[in-house]
Image 1 (cartoon, rainbow, N blue to C red):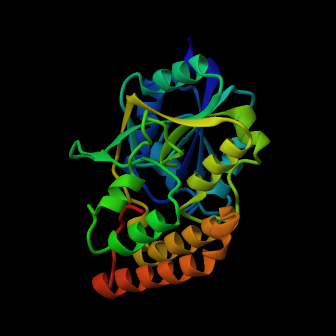
Image 2: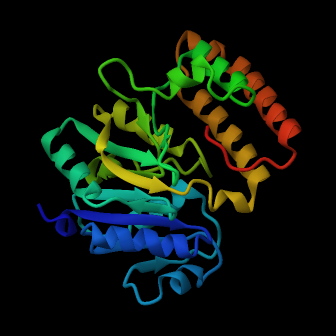
Length: 283
């Protein structure tokens, strides 16, 4: 399989600088010919970082947010079977893209595949998660800021028995282009955070599955762009989590949505009060 003929990448940049250049270079080394970079930061910053690389740069002139920027980039990539979505501070390990493509080729019922995402120190970022029930969601929300390794958070960040996952991190994943378009791409009501959950939810509602592919590996610097506005990103994270709960809660769970609002409000207050100026952290 020739990855260059099947996969186009969209990278959303926000002042990532040298990290963006490394991201694009590792995508090129892994066989991608078509790369679109959407510049959510100041116009010209992505081009300056990429120097002579032929990536197409889309400069909307405003910060569109992550999902909306991906949608703009996806509209420009042309006719490819697969769309690769990436943060700008990702470094792709050799063979990762081909491994994801081969996996989706072998599993037509699966539309989204996420790799193992490693931190620079080699530890694994919890990028493969489940949609939690009400109790698990509440326990994770309240305990994680004070006790990061609590049992509820570990369960939320672990695959289901048999290795199935409900959603994968939007930091880096491969999606079938036709399914991405069928569900309308990313829900643009999400500015930052939870847009990956919402996309995977829509994909599953459309009758497809989501999977983790452990043999595909990337390294994520994690939070490079978010560090420029940490307090705003913490607030955006909680707003998006609340939107997802109200959007997807059904049946009896819908009755608990106001409780979810209260829990997320308490969680946000705990984080802001404890850290004052919180840095980037995992959801």
